[in-house]
Image (cartoon, rainbow, N blue to C red; front, side, top):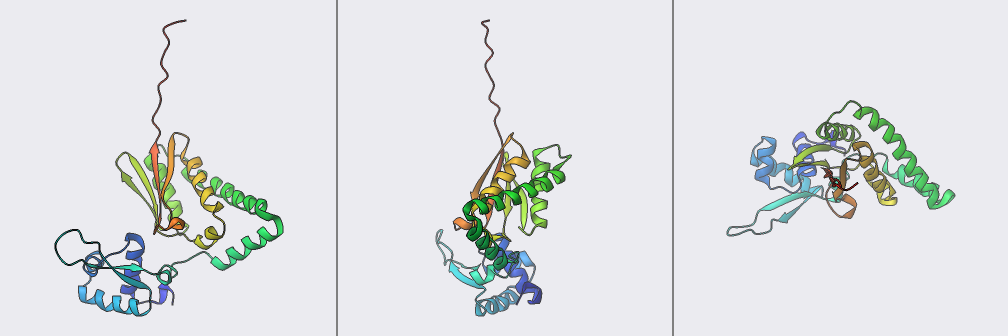
Length: 223
């Protein structure tokens, strides 16, 4: 069953857990604007279908720890993965025919094509905030469930889903190329660092984007 064929409340629960991580029934009810009882009914169905699993919240003081719900591997699989098996098979074929050098060329070609498209879309942006927001919009359209958030003086590019996850697991050069791509299109005056990585066990990918500090060159008073 795809998300399109699910009960609307169940679909919204899965999306809420996908984008915000583990949550309890009360928090889900408040976020979705439905009754706690309605959430409990749909949660039970999702548990029966092994799309979600329960976990105890770590105790932070007195009181009974809450039950939190999170997506299982089957739950994550309900979100589009950009023809996962086809991508994996094509990478395997390229590797068999041309070796790792051929795979690297494939990754670089994809990065170069994306660079042209991204730079065209970012043309005319004047500030870092504009560039990050527009980059997030591009990634959202590509299926990464992306958004930009301000964090102090920095910006965070948050991607709650990876539509090429299966391909990236087969060839992590895609992840390396994406980080390089973000740095290139956002400009040399900023620093881009990946703080959370889905393939490293995180539930999403998060990039911290910071303006580089300008280093003033001291002026010599001696000719």
